[in-house]
Image (cartoon, rainbow, N blue to C red; front, side, top):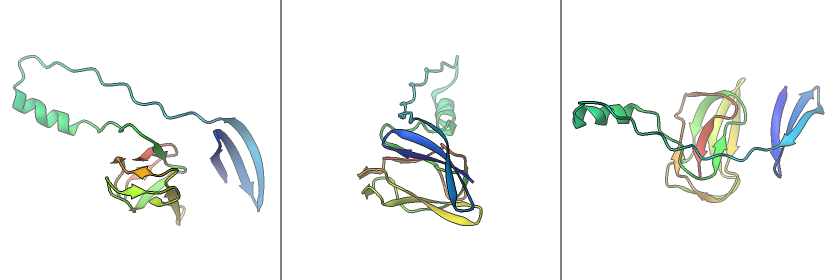
Length: 133
């Protein structure tokens, strides 16, 4: 089984087999980059009332702050926090079910939950944004 682990700004790709671990790769961890603001879209001769539902259907942008990413692919089993909750480093934010195991995703630092980017039952891939603190 392969894992990616980040410690003090360095990401290690580790393979664990039969109780033994082997480092496959080591590289500098990338810092989260805030998304670029979306360019405004002009719709010719469209009534204002029709533009409002289209804007609501667009995917939500990720809020500024500390982005907590999925460490492994799986299903969102439980969401333990709500937007606006104060969390401390190590508090459980999300539980991901992968290969019949429940994996807890914890807060990397103290803060307030600004955004929850997933919903219960959703499939996530490694690196997908789960929560913004």
